[in-house]
Length: 271
Length: 244
Image (cartoon, rainbow over all chains, first blue to last red; front, side, top):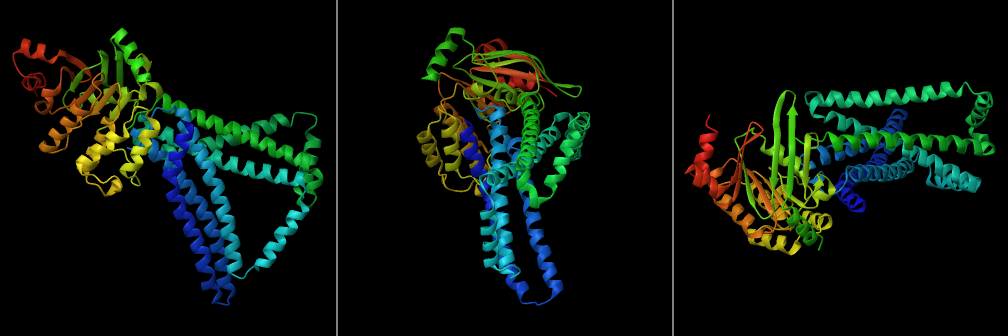
């Protein structure tokens, strides 16, 4: 059943993301030649801003699209189809989180490619320099380095998925019948309350951690990996920190998902 | 095969749906109040009541679109959940399609999720209706969408068909078509649970009626017995019971 849900979630979302990706690619192909006509520092500066702007707006559009997918698919008229399928709420929520993860990864890849194309087309960075730099970077990394990079990428992806899971729970709370009249402010407030609670939890752990005798050594190690040029000498510690981040994200994603599932199982009341 | 075993189990207990002490409140108002109901297989049951009587609330609970209630609801002995949803074919009072879909997409979805879905039956019904299975649903008229949704629902060999106001908002010719489609395509060992406030059009198809007023069942029973006891049609009785 989960596989079928994933299949249909992909089918219902690919059009939105295809439009975003095509817009990015058109933007990075069309805009640079336009800017290249003007040999002007201000124009070049604007072009740089635009490049960053494209990346940021891509992230915003992705988040909004993922939120809409959950909100529309579960709580709008489409919910009468989704919530009456012979699937558990757990399967429905897990499917949407898996799809969200997939689109986060793909959007990241497309954005990175888009930025490279933008830079090359703008003649800001020659393509040969990019590919040389990339080859040098790869030659410097050994298998441990690849593992570290992979885990860092996983941590970043899970961190993004955590935000999406938080959005889903905030959306579910906003759709509680008792809060019908204040749906939008409740949804927004819930999101920020959860973010604040996360900060409090991290601060509480940090405070607890500071009571242990090995804290000084830990902070010393932390300062060492702050210097990126020597990070490969302290890869073990770095990987350990990344694993802690991954575990934290997974626990928090599970908590948000369980909250959403509980609401769908006990408080669902479609309009 | 699983449906056959389920029907055999059902016939032992003679209960398809059991609702016990069902109450649903919104703030201080009870949409449903202490409903107790048993539906047996092989009946066409009319859930009748004026607007706001609780018909849609009761139907949403049975279909699984509303989980926040007090009391117990089972379909074929199972609480409302994935197992009961696999046995229930539900037609809500409005369309639930995504705008990007065409009929073929929905047929593929139903075929994937419901083992009792008859694809050929659905396609045949579409063709008889003159609907193009590749036409985007967002380009269809309201009437076409409603008919297509009905085709999907009635193409399942479900144990319980729940139809929420299937003839509300359509013209009289379309109403006859919808009623005929329902009667000629449902699984006769199953039960149809149909809500409406347009009694005169559907009275002919029911064998059991339930009158709902302000969340409470005020009348329930075999339609012929009720007509004989009351000496009037269900439509006339409805107007009397729900007189403003």
